[in-house]
Image 1: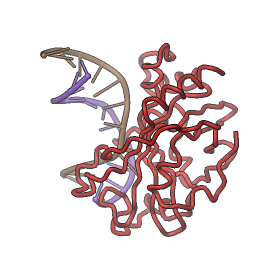
Image 2: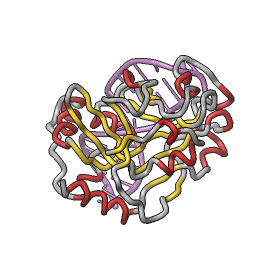
Image 3: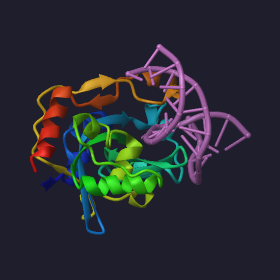
Length: 215
DNA sequence: CCCATGATGCCCT
DNA sequence: GGGCATCATGGGT
């Protein structure tokens, strides 16, 4: 799989949010390779976007990452226990980012299941046995970080590294992505209504599930 | 399927 | 001190 080059990320957050759909998100941590196909994203458009951490040009130790050049990981803690993985977009000092909201598991599902079981120390997590379970397995920003082993130690890292990268898996997206409102940003006033959430069509997702199963 | 709720730590949206 | 770019669970429908 071909890692996406640095130039890929040097575009605005809305374009990048669309472009990342269907790409493979890969981590290779301590010899454990896990990956998933990006199925859902949200754009956060920085200074002008009331939902963005960088709204109004806010700079803090946390948001500093968003001001880096495109192609970095922006990872932060949410609700006290989950990490959110964002891809920094655009050129330096333009603080836009794309939240990865869902991936379809590709490689290393057994390792993902182990990580999820470890995270919530009670129940064992069974590997998905059908398409519905596969789609529910790593389909949220917190869950996919658990599955891929992403925590805040990855903040600011470039996304063409050895242990974290995004790659072109050769998957062809056939349909336009679905557009919808972003999730859980009620505080964002008019920005809460912008259709800045992008999802692969059901047909494309079904194809990707089969792709994963063929390996 | 839907909705309500608790867990939990950091950042100030 | 308020409130989060969330998830799992347990109930009802």
